[in-house]
Length: 350
Image (tube, rainbow, N blue to C red; front, side, top):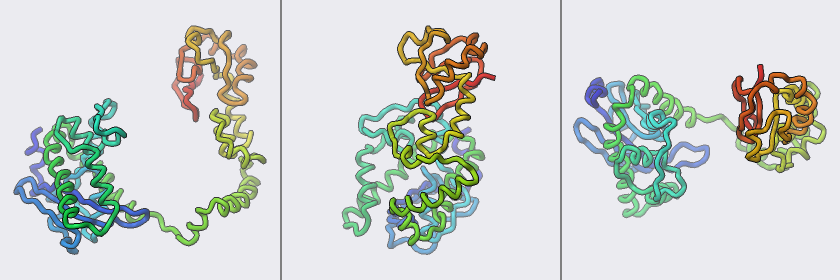
């Protein structure tokens, strides 16, 4: 399907991008807007003091708005008191959908690898020339530093903002053949207007109380008062949960439960799985070891001991062929996988 076929239902198609300052818990502080209408070729470049109470374009269902990460653009509409665009095509989730399971190429200019799924990564994927990640990071950093901006910085920020709109203009025709527009618009409704509204409204918080709760000592005293009352009904916390919680050296499945303060009552659930679990060493010979001869390496405090106790009663384990898994956990290969809170993949036996 051609670009014309996909967009024929829309009288106008706007590519738009905002630059803004984001502060924790606050609406966006809009810095500027650049928008380009594809049919007429009209381009709008407006600084903050030029943005009025009404948007400089239509926002009804006869107009399609195209952007990359629509939460930000829709959030700027909310911050300005503008109506939300009725139809938004967010290219960010579309690109993630198109490249799902695909290894994206590295960019030597992007040392941190942040741009693979972003606008720069999408442009690079389609072979479109793009600005460097270093330049983009530098401009975003200056915008986030906030007011005031010099006249030269205003020009640079508007130019940078326009470069993203220009990139969208080149990216959209490349992506459209792979986009099912009705589904994409439905998906973009959540990634754009809905997410922006959730972010804008947030969760009401009593900031005075919240400031106190952020004090670790105050929170610890509240926690110490609450846990005994809760444990009377549920019996899920151990007597030494506070000491165990601070033990960062435990990385096993049972240890992960102990570290969060759960009692040995919950460890009994792990013990019930023990007849179906064997943990071998990670040496290369493990792949060829049999169930009976494989040395054990406990996932938790109980698994190794209980495996030795129960394996004679587990013919399914003895008869199932062994396969080397992450962490050398061996179980019946005929059943689905389940992941512990460690790197060990465990297989259930029916």
